[in-house]
Length: 418
Ligand code: AMP
Ligand code: MG
Image (tube, rainbow, N blue to C red; front, side):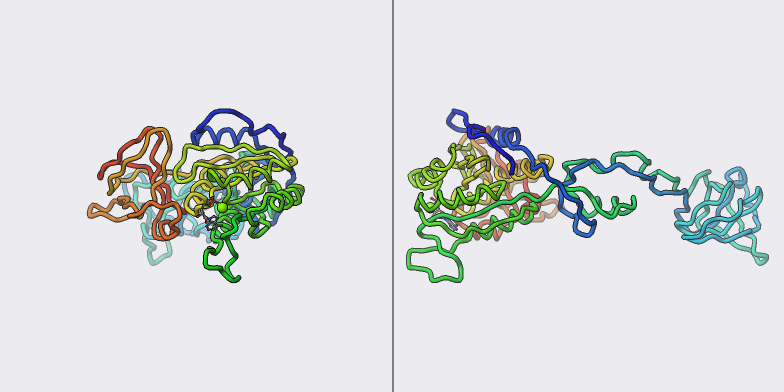
């Protein structure tokens, strides 16, 4: 496990901005050290542990980009068309066995290697073949046309993928093209998760009249899985600090991160606070974020603890903007803030200065073919439908106090929050 010092999150100050919070997390948490080799078939989503250097160029040999006729560049027709005897035929997968002499052409197909001397290929659509089987080439083609030189894609020795990057399908393809069968990746981080609250019961069990089915745990487990974490589900803990302390203590030794939801809002904070403090240390961060605000960070015998607020929307937003940064840091992944895109607001909104707000919005296509952001009509942090029925979040910066229709705002798609 990554070993943290008890005071690694300790600092004073009232409200902390989202950027400061993320920067602090990134600087205090270090990546798991163990790595493993995984087959390419299961490498998607994993974090590379080492730079990957190309052992060969791509393409590995110079080849034709089209189906057509190859010739020597010196023979290219100048101003009038010119006829050439066709002296051979070479298809993809065949190695050329003889050079093409001056004044000769060769039938060649896409992906086939160029024989010695040939450096230019005519597309078959651009030529005629006469009754004697000679090919008639028009003027106007440049030397080197329709050829893919060896190494034009990747030069041998180039660092093609970097340690700390998350493998995507195209990265897996590149590793395969270079002849790799497996890649060295960081081990998956182990995250234990639980919900807290006397009012929270698991779906599938009997719900009392004043109880809610647990939704956060399932949302957060899904988000953890998308970030490539190995998750241990610790279920629901009642608001009992002794019980929470026991579970934390037991989970700490086997995980890199313990993630909880609920029990961190003002007035309710005591259970989680007392529990974490009895087995480790805890700091409450009043992060200047809405929905969200109270986020607890702690250390339990070297293992990080994050307590998210219980309201589902607050849990979602603080996971995406704060817990995600911790997961990237522990997993050894390069910190990549979610990508935002400019969009026109189709709503007006007032907010307080000094905190960042995330407004749930749907995308609407306008007559000019662009999109605008339509705000979900209600604002409650407990409204799951507000996440389900929208496409993403509009991020309103600390200094913003007012949004007017038509104004450009920054949009974060839910799909980009993984
Ligand atoms: P808390 O942060 O514990 O004060 O909870 C804030 C609100 O979120 C309360 O209305 C809780 O009932 C609700 N809540 C807490 N945990 C969950 C959960 N796991 N699933 C759904 N709602 C929750
Ligand atoms: Mg609670």
